[in-house]
Image 1 (tube, rainbow, N blue to C red):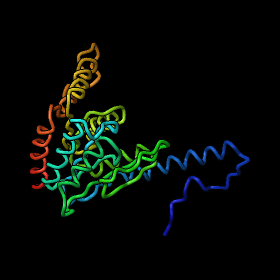
Image 2: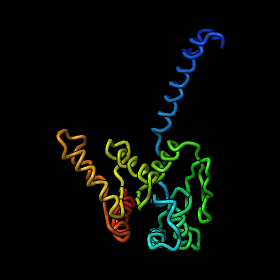
Image 3: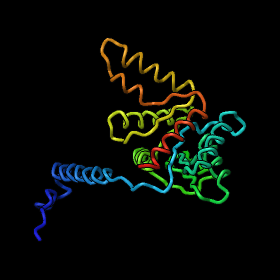
Image 4: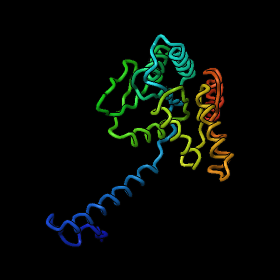
Length: 238
């Protein structure tokens, strides 16, 4: 069998040749990205259970009303036979994982945490049953996208906003199959209103008006559950 000769190895390059070394490194990186792009085109088969990712602040304490709302939300979704996915850390991530475990005494569903290695490392919360670890935000966010059938965005800071906007953009450019992106609370409605003011209503439109219809902005977790119920029924028939 004839093998295609790699453009990296027509001849050996010495480290004493900076220009040649740099050329080899650049070519190797480009070829590595080609491999990564090919692998990211793969999609997992349909899973046994519907999976909902819940994003939200790591700073919220367990005695707050929103913590209890997220815990109740995860409990209701788990009783609907949904797996719950979070970042696996403290705050609202703990609330979601805790609600999942509390509603699943027979261990039928999974409480999943997708972690990121940081210098100021947050411990994985004790309610995570299955943990994945990443060294980069890029690979971590990609796993969220690969394994999720819906996203619920609760109030949060810069990290939560990054996650919400990433999913929003992937849905916008159709790199992600249409799935619910549900934003709960006034901060996200204000974000969409900001986008409308500056991206749509300005002199030069910076986005399509339909892009602003992608997120489902709701006021309560009850409304989020109603959207998940409808989506899950559709998913079951696919």
